[in-house]
Length: 290
Image (cartoon, rainbow, N blue to C red):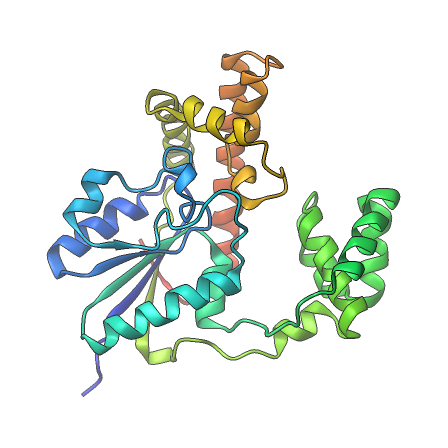
């Protein structure tokens, strides 16, 4: 008899209802809800990341939500090192788990594998970063394409951090980042999990994104962003790149009106949701859809 997986991966774009579905399932099954969203890791982003409320967290056990400070930089590797012992612990207790989020790379690490890339020497990273700043993205991307065409083609426009990392890896290790990624094994055995992607109608999804942006203001997003601004953190930190941070910070700094900042936040949220939809459609074609 085939054993039913006790781990369900629930993926999908922002504002698609993942957290609500997971909470309903957890209340019915006693499952533990585990975070797989890179922004919901940060304690400083409860409102901006639409993290489950305190009331929702009281209705079912939630893990790995709000566990990091905004000054920290959690990588995919650090998340997997946190989540795998937790999954093993729950499996030993025969407790079901729901792993919920919109960060596709987290799901990829579990189901396809995570490359064991050596740490980059600081001198190499700094030199590559200086090259990027001097050359600009177009010329830098051409250089990357010479040593790692797969990464150059896959990294989205404007993603400075990933472009720099890809070239730094190639220079430091003599091996392309895409080659490192290809040499991987999944962290989860194929029969130990099942996957579900929430894929709402695009118009309905965009309406939900707009509603979420409005609710953020009502729930204290401006106070949250002001607290981040007061800390004067590195703008390249993951928490500082959350949707709404840059837009609302510009308003608080007197650079734009609240109305304009909200328009930009709504558009940024819709753009993010669209990218997530496309990613999950391309990367998880064999997962169930809802």
